[in-house]
Amino acid sequence: MATKLFVGNLEYTVTGDDLKEAFSQAGTVVDAVVITDKMTGRSRGFGFVEMSSDEESKAAIEKVNGMDVKGRKINVNEARPLVPR
Image (cartoon, rainbow, N blue to C red; front, side, top):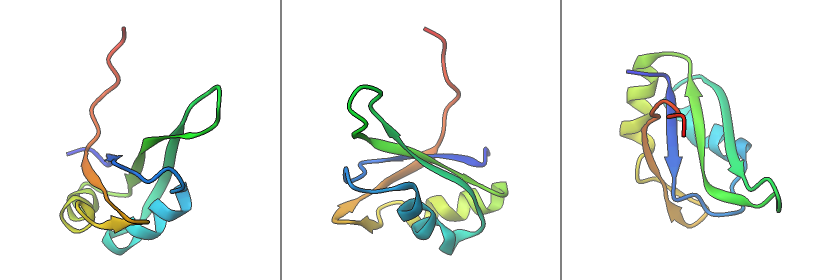
């Protein structure tokens, strides 16, 4: 299992700090980022969270998947590697 997690269905005002707060109950958060549009700077509605270990990543999926963050139930899955176009 990877330590990097994909987080989807984010409300557009959610920040990396909001993700860190939500995921911290499952363990140590190494990094949390919300992906934004390069032109507008607006959130694209998804992000990534990196946990410090595989065990914490698994715990985060179990605890945080489906959690309500700013009015939306977020989806948490293991991040897949970037595929070149």
